[in-house]
Length: 280
Image 1: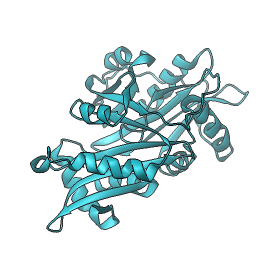
Image 2 (image 1 turned 135 degrees about the horizontal axis):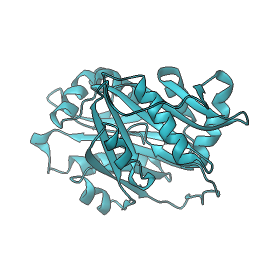
Image 3 (image 1 turned 90 degrees about the horizontal axis):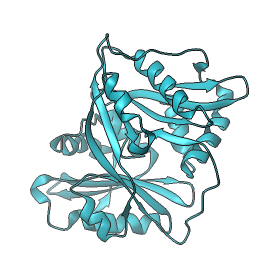
């Protein structure tokens, strides 16, 4: 086992492709640059990876945990997770598990919480998304701090490093009714096309605002392959399917609490869509 290096990334694309994950090398590099990773080599070939991303002093997300199919069942995934958890220290850890990983993560002290629904399709030009631009505008530089505060309120995690990278790389829209931003959403190149997320909204119109942002972001990418990962408790899945983005799979959000767990403050801000399943 060794640290994951930049020169591992071309081989990492092959590892993820073997599992049917459509990560490009650019997607691996985006994730690699934001966090820390572990790698396993056999005869100079990359055969396993695991990454984690600090989110402030108290939290971290875990993902891109891959073991070559020919080497699964030999304890490599467990060894990677043990080392990763040691590096993360006392942080509360979150991850989105496949069904296959559920047993391992449960043994490691993670508990399942809800479900994430993966929606994706080639978005036809005749799809039903109708943008509502009344209160939607492009993010400006002065929005960065308010958006970080909104994100912290919704997630309870300091994701400022992730957000700065997203705001540099993605297209970001906000909802602004003249009293400051109450919602934001991003879209960026990812996998076979683009991914919408994160989407966060607050206030009594949060669900309507999330839909308005998603519709505007999707409308700008008609004719492309569009993906969005939403938490089931948002209630957006049926609407997304009706708009031409069917649910094609699920992930299981899991949390491993530690003694540093902080009780979240009361808030009406909600996470509607993830940045992606790996980083959360």
